[in-house]
Image: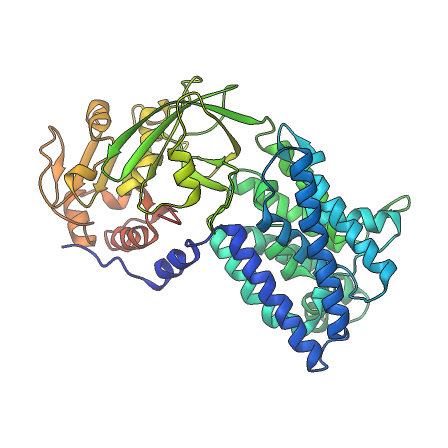
Length: 505
């Protein structure tokens, strides 16, 4: 028997995966801006519609124009979505006004924020959250201190669902939870120490401080996050303390934007600090619907089997999927001269994939980061059960090729829509991996066990892998396939399940 692939969670992930993270942020921030106008027109917000409109226009136009200028100076394609996000964030940080001088300072904040993406960099990777840089520059110079008016209580009606969608899509809910608990907890204790009831202090933390907006839209900025989960949780805790405790060093007082910049520095120290430049060595078709790209890195790339690489490919007229995409690494980290990824090919494809697949051997491409916690247990004696669906085989291939898989008890359940769609079948056979294959017909690979079409349900899985309940499971593939496999594993008695759903599958 096979399991159903449709769940509400999987449908939501598929829906969110249809657009790039940047495009989703633009949509959500615009929705929040629209809500602020509704509140203003209803008299529920202190600022007038004209003040909101003037501030919004100034912040967005300044970042868009600055992005164009910087793009020309540095000979890169201006990233419109990124510029829009920076401008929209600044709109929520500075006091809405129609005063020409104050609007000029907001425009300067937009210029400073945009310039930081090009100037405050290390080997083509920017270090700080741009909006936080713009806000900090204005605050430390005394030109226009950010007030974070987005913390207005009724703005939470729009902020809460928007922030939750961002954090759910980015899989950063635990990180945001740590920051929120630390920051709100400290603020509550401070008010309680001053004699305010605990519940009132807690309410003040969420209705007078930009805790939720900060967690959803500032702390979550992808290019300034450390690569590993524990590092992100540690950063969230540190930033939460700095956010909530009134500190000062000489004339510089702690503020939300400064707290975030300190966190950015910690993340930069923990992450891939070197620029990642790759030269395409070769490409090949894996299946009728998937392709492998093999690169040579300019300098050895540090990563752990199971992690991903985010490729950056600026190109004219990008679609809603954006200029960057994440791909699981399929190569063995022990080979410093090879970095490979595999991707699903569709027709029509995104503008990114179209440009990527059109690259010829010798072409160069950059990557922004390496990350991910989809890694094998450190204890090599722990038994592992891998479940791959389609192109979801990619992170497992890196693991199985590496020394991390040596002398481990590993079982791979590999599902594909047809025998022809079994990517890396020959490599898996050569590796001697124990494979339970799920395809409409038997691929007749020596040593493999055919289970029939579709992912097995809990009973079939327990029958095929009698000791499944004692294994640590890892699942990768489309969101619907991952959700289905997770249910089957739980039904088979597996307690520890790690997942890697591929958005935009």
